[in-house]
Structure formats: C-alpha cells, structure tokens
Image (cartoon, rainbow, N blue to C red; front, top):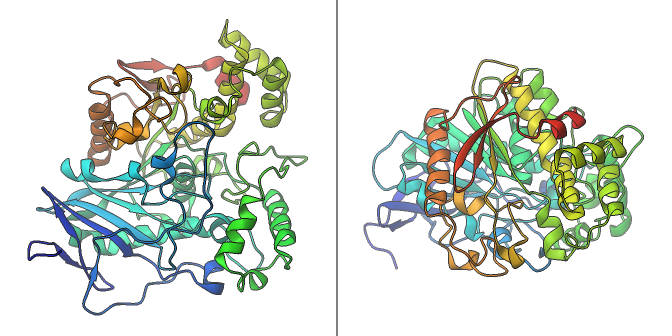
Length: 495
C-alpha cells in the first residue's frame, strides 16, 4: 500500500519508489546491470535497459542461482538467507538512506558465502543502522558459482568481481540522487566478499570508484592460479557432459549449473608450485596470475584507506558445528598444516610454541584460520602499509560466542551482527544461533558499528595506523585493547 510520502528517486535507468521507515528511506531490488541470461551469464555485465514509469522498489527481488548451504549444527540462515529466489533480473542493489539531506558517506557491502551462496536478502545485511547513523548503505548481488567464477575459455575471468565493479559504477552515477556522496565511497565485504574487495583494490578498472575499503575475514592470497581453476573447469564440464567452453555452457539451464557446482567440492587443487588457498572448502575463488596482495605491494590501491581484520578463532566455524573440534587429533593438526604450508612440521612447531597448553582442536582451528584468512590478511595489510599514500588499519575481533555449548567462540562470521548493529535479532540468539544463548557486552555492537561508520566517514577507525614495524592491531572484545604485532611467532612462519 503506497501513499504520497513513499520516496521516489530517478536513476539513470528510470524512477524507483521505495519505502519510508521512520527516518530512513529503503529501496530494494534496483537493477545495476542487465539480467545475465543465456550466453550473457558468461559475458561482462552490461547496462540495464531503461524502464518507463516508476519501478516498485519495496519488495525483495531474486537472488543469484545457488544451492542451499548448511554448516552442521549452527543456524546459518541469517547469513545465507533464503537460498535461491528465482528470477533472472538479480544483478541488483538495495539502498538504505537517511530520508533527508545529501552528501552523505556511502558504504557498499559485498556478501560472503564461499563464492557460491548468499544474497542481499540475508537478515544480517539490513542497512537500517547505517542509515540511522547518516550513511547511505548499499548491498549488492553478484553472479555466483559457475556463472560468476568458473574460469571458462571464451568468457572473461572473475565475472562476479566484474559485477561488483559495475555496481560501483552504478553508485558513482546514481548515488547522489539517494543523498550519497559519490566521492566518499567505502567498499566493504566479508569472507568471499572481502576477498573480492581485495581483488577490486587490485583491479585497474576499479581505480577511482571508491576511496576506502574494509576487508573482514578475507584474503589477499585467496586467488586460484589458472592451472588450479582449469581443474575445476574440466570437472564441471565432465559433470555436465559438455565441452569446457563458454559456448557449450551458454545453453545450459541455471538449475543444471547449480547442481553441478554443488558436486565440485573436494577437487585437489594443490600443484607443484601452489597450495589450495581455500584448503578444499570451495571450488570457486578469484582466478588471477598475481595475488591481490602482490598487486597491492606493487602499488595498486595505494590511494585507498584500508581497514583489514580477522576473527580470533576463524577456523572454529568449519570444525565446531560438524563435531570435528573436540575430536581433533595430532594427525588432524598435521594434515591442516600439510594442506597449507610447504613445511608442516615447522608450522605446527611454531603454533605449539606460541600456544602452550592448546588442545589439538585449538591448534587445528588456528592453522586453518590462518591458512584461509590470517596469512592472506596480514599479507594485504603489509603490502598496503608499504605505500604511504593512505592509511592502513588492522583489527582482530575476539569476542567469543557461547553457541554450541560455549565452543563456537570468535568464529568466522561472528563479527557481522556487531558491524551491522543487529546483535538484538532473535534469530541470532540461542544455543545453535550465531551469537549464542548469552547477552553480548552491552556496547559491543554499538561501538563496532560506530567504528565502521567512523572509518567510512573519516578514514580513521580511532586507533594507530598499521605499519610493518609495530603492526598495531585493535583487539575487539568486551574491552578494546591495542596490541603491537600480535602472534608474531605464527606470523613469521607464514612469510
């Protein structure tokens, strides 16, 4: 039901009507690129056709094709959202903006989900708190799985990343009409989305489209080589019974691509010269000859302020909910090291020394977390800090969730409800929920969220910059404590 107060904004493609919620205007499902159909799923994003009249932007739209995701006993539905909401016109943004005023800082969020799942419909990405605090918050869908990231001859690589760049171009062109400042854009993402942000930081075609970046539990060393990606492509083509070429994939329905993608887990991507940066957790990632951290070391993104961080117990998410944490053995610790480091014995020894009294589960989780996120986040921060043109800042989110009998801890994704100031959501509370059964510290969400907003507004999160000598890092917990060079023994064994 609409009335005359519902906000209408005219974009370059046409007018959209949103909703007014208290002092915020919300616009859902605005296209930033043409629907990826047929062969277009394997082409660069194209501009959307203009529309006549006023497009309704009051209800959620379709999401990228994907299969259902579960992670054992933890309820990840607020993270992954409702799964595949069908419809071709899914390259869209949602916008939350203060109902009045202009020239506001803009934050553009790239969701995670292993490059294969997730959407703007996920409960954790409600932008209301950002708009309440004077920020224009944009969330976006991008192509996932085979359409987004399979490296196919006849198709450009990293199409999901190209979608993110297209969304940034849409923001540059249209966000002023929503009250945003197109020259004050912060690109931020979590997990796969954070690795994409690192890739965009390194991508020449994105230069000048954003001023700041936040990398939450991503990796500057997370890309596959062309040789690794070709293994996945061969397996996908064999499963589908077609030639490994974009022309052969163009006629296949989305449902077939999704079904095949879900069967590709477990391909061994280790080569003579390269480890698998995702240690078998996903067959999809960016595909690059040069890792983003190396491109940033060479000067890419030097003019962009960067906030990069990880959670203190990232690896717990992949072990605790599937009952592999408490049952871990010395052999499991060695296997985790062997999957991620050329000298596993040396790696394990460094972790044992740095963590006296740690259980096998704790050592295994720490090695897994560093292999996936820690080492690649440090590499990105180190590379960026070597160029003095802009600020580099680091954090570690250390608050422990007591979900799953107190074992989930400061796992991967646990910081998200605090960043979005949504820790009060009922679906995040309970034994199997992300935040767990206990009340988190009263001001943790308000302070974490305010810190992200402050960084977007000023380029300074409120603590000392990170450099390659002191390595100043803010440890975020019930108390916030600045630590110089945290876990230096573990850091050194990766370099």
